[in-house]
Length: 178
Image (cartoon, rainbow, N blue to C red):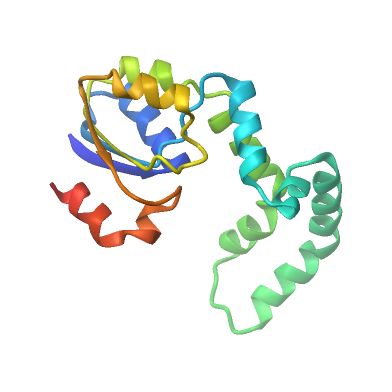
């Protein structure tokens, strides 16, 4: 079994992996785990935390613009990656030009909006450390109350917002290693 660390959406994925395959994960460390009580709350919190450009990116207009630009630029991007001295395999070039807005939106919907962190935490058998900040826009007051009642979670509060590994790398690393 391994120690699995995840930040943000990666923490949601790590938690799901630990629930689905408890034999693989001995210890789970969740940093800035987005925790919402319901899909509606998740959608509201994510949109509220975004700037206008990001909100436009996940809208229908964003889908139209990204789809058009991806289709128009795909040949140019592929040609540029092949001729500008990049030593990339064809599979990587195809993957780079294929993944776009649709991949991002699908991940956002499937992992964040339709994911029950509450249910996964209830079903998690791994020893779990939860590293969080009270200023994290993706950790609601309701979710924090639920977490505070969870005795099997080792909770570590840090000063910061949603990007603790970037803002406090040494402190986060210390908590991961201990």
